[in-house]
Length: 411
Image 1 (spheres, rainbow, N blue to C red):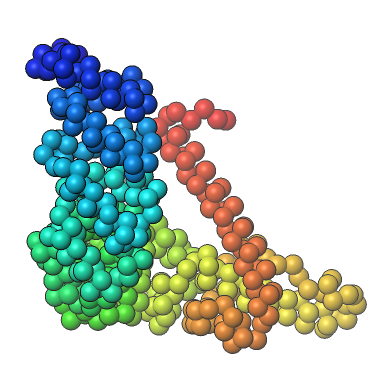
Image 2 (tube, rainbow, N blue to C red; image 1 turned 90 degrees about the vertical axis):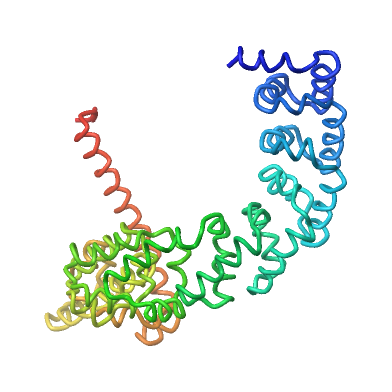
């Protein structure tokens, strides 16, 4: 590498190019090792010291620090430094600050240092059409600020050749409305870096194998778009429902149509949810009768609600038994303690519809005629104990894997 760099250096004049450029970078407080890095990776910076100084002055006005300067020059295309003017770059900066309202510190750290090539874009021909399309999709200007800072590459997207085809695919193939596309972009702007067919083609194909038609897809999307934002593997989820849970393809189709939110689950979450169903005695028919159970959160909804109702049932049984036996004692002694996660999961057969609706805890407690405060206290204990249980389980799985590899050093 050193020889290659040394060979290329022979094309530069030490006195009129290299030394003046190094002096400029030193005055900008770059460390010697950083200058060497630029010399080895971005040698074009050293060909025109005057031009380099202009860029350093421009970036100094934007308050780029030493680390940010290095990142900018390491990522900046050669064409930006050698062929574009400070004036054209200033127009882009002005629009991002005044037109979009991006704060200077965010502009420097989150946009320019990450994607310097944005300074090569034309405000009128490139950036504004993209912004106009996003606003037409219902994305607010304040949200566009966040999008640009989260994923500056969105400013590099061409409205006609990249965004419009993306929008058309989402509308025609998946049945998304313009507003829904805007919501998807707002939540996951990085998706625009890949064609929509590459992202969703395999998911659509997997659903089609289970009898999901284009009309079904449109119906699903009209009710649920989370699965379009999530990175879940739809094929794995569907295979699990057939191979592990024992549903038929037609039954899986019915589950997906009734509870499309399950498509956004991670495989591990679906596995744990189904394991819980088995532990509490919920059959396949129970799940088919209440598909929404596959959408509900295991730790946030199903587990604590079932455990809480089960604890009430256990307390009433205890009270009844003590009353029949004539046992005297305080109310605190009569009530049994809150069961553990394992006890509450396996002590009685679950009725899934009672756990799923209403989704909000307040209305659910009112429907069950229980105190919201008591349930919230139980839920906090349940979540804490469940987390401990999962931590122990993960530790055991890791230990078993070490043993399988023959590198476990414990007893």
